[in-house]
Length: 123
Image 1: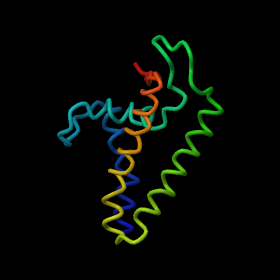
Image 2: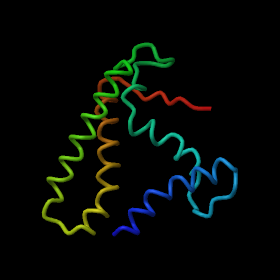
Image 3: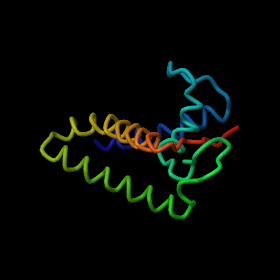
């Protein structure tokens, strides 16, 4: 289990380093560099939600967006712990990325129903 945790901790640094050095990445995922750059903005997006483009009306100001993001992901962690409480550790670890992706898609869907959209900040 420790080896998996070490790999999970080191892999993003290796991929970011290869992307920074503009070296070819041997993982056959199209636009991996864009996904690595924009994924944190997409997952922790509460300070980038606005109505209209250009961002005319932000839903949350940065300090409250940070606190709302912490509260949201703490609630997601508690929900995940409740759902996977009786599962074996390996099954729970395999289920975690699906749960995170589903929570991210669900929160963006709910905000889109109220007319808010994500405005990504990047080059």
